[in-house]
Amino acid sequence: MRPDLFQDGGQKHTSDHDASQPLIAVMGTTGSGKSSFINHITSDNAAKVGDSLEACTRHAHMINFQLDGMQGSIIDTPGFDDTNLSEYQILEEVSLILQTLYHGGKKLSGLIYLIDITSARWKGSDASNLTLFSKICGEDSYKNIIFVTTKWDLIDDEKAVKNEAQFKEKYLSFHIQLGARLMRHRNTSETALRVVSSILGQSETVLKIQKELVDGRMGLKDTVAGLHLATSLQQSVESSSKRLAKFRNEWRAASSPIVREALEAAMATEETKLRNSKIDQEKLESANQATKFFELANTMDQAAKFTGMSRSDLISILVTKGLAFFLQSAYGMVSKRTDSNTEIELLKQELRNVKEGMEAKNGSVYTSWSDVAKILGDVASAYNRIR
Image 1 (cartoon, rainbow, N blue to C red):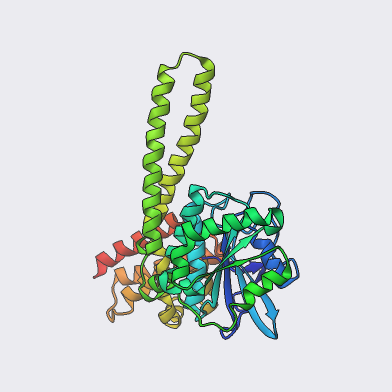
Image 2 (image 1 turned 135 degrees about the horizontal axis):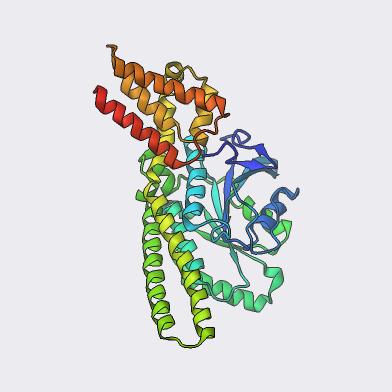
């Protein structure tokens, strides 16, 4: 978790939102008009507008708005199908945003999912993104979802209406049966504000993944969304492996240098896909560690006292590097010991060394999960020696 999880021009927004004010998450695929939609609401070009398929919203932005005398906040999330992020990274990013909000006592009033009306047919990734979004929300929260079709100004109305009917029948019918709504945005402030206005005043919701991660203390890979992604990644691995085998057989049988060169390019592309899918699988497998960030909240003061760090230092660690695992584990291990021996003193010294190392390198000494895993391994080893 990063300190700039919610950002806009480098300014933090985690504390700008009043929990009593409406909080709306805006989601959608890259290129669906998400940033333009938000700018119509805020009227200050707060969300950078992408002019290509390369996603411009990298982290979450919390942007304040005012409508009909009521103040609220919009969360601009990373786009599904982001060109710069893998499937796992997108789920991780979105889940951390939602987890942070709920853990901080903030609930969503609504979710807006944008759909490009100019696409007559959905790609496989479009359907997959909708499924992932649905798993994140859970059926109990469908009533808080508004599906908003965008880019009506770029297509003939008759064709757009046909596309809309197809989307509704083929992909959105179940959501609508459970209370989701379908609205149109014609790239005007009037239509954008109409969508937001329809959310104001409705009951808040807690999403499925928020209940799982915070209330159930589940790891990301064990959530409904995580299980869906795990299945998708495994299918991708199997599909890429089959295609690679096919290309290799064709390459061996090919006599033309041109054909072989084309097959080599295809194999290189498939190998990259396969490697990335396997990397995502590994990350998802270890994602349970992320939920441990929040377990320190109830013992923050005790941990601060034990380590000699300030509360702000511990929070910084908690949201950036994952050393909370070490602090919580070490605190739990030694705080129950009333005796004193060499091993316990060594463990305390190890904790002090971590603190001093962080201070010496401005908190950047531990930058990866492998670093954290090593620390946890050291702590586990120490615990086995003293228990």
